[in-house]
Image (tube, rainbow, N blue to C red):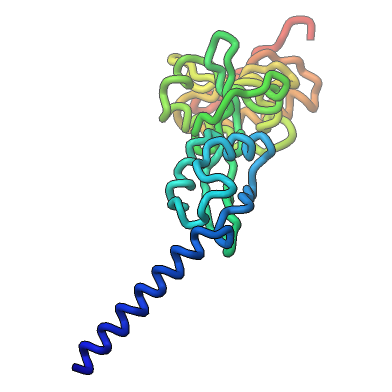
Length: 237
């Protein structure tokens, strides 16, 4: 008898709680009043607000926050997204945007940003293309593994100075010569090869520094040899 009474009491409390919840949920107390987006640029924030399927005035608890996070990650600039409910009426969307590391030349005048993880992001603005090394050629467009190697090569370079990432105009891959890059300041073509790339990069950098110190106008530095580096000097230097 006591057990039955206890069960009845529990059932009454549960029904009361459900009724109370439904009543509150129908009022404006738990209606969404604010959607805050953190960590995004203005352009990304505007796109995210269109992607999300929850809007101000909806129930704060009406839709899955996990589903909203997946929608946010559909934006090409969004690397990570976390969506949280902030009681009583705010939805917080915190994102981590992808950072351009290089630009991929897709041909026909089309360029797209690539991040350091080899993810092609979105269209690159023409006025900003020169701020990044440009990956050129069919091989780097179509071969993900080869493009990943190209990005590793760029990561091995210092950020500033002679033969640095900021000094690389473009980087491509030639079937015969391997990786080749043009330096933006001097216009020198550097042959890096396919193997022992760190060694060849180091040799080429020392040669480029020597050429700069002695005002030697070279057009090509080929470091893809076992024990030597070949330098082609421009006529009338």
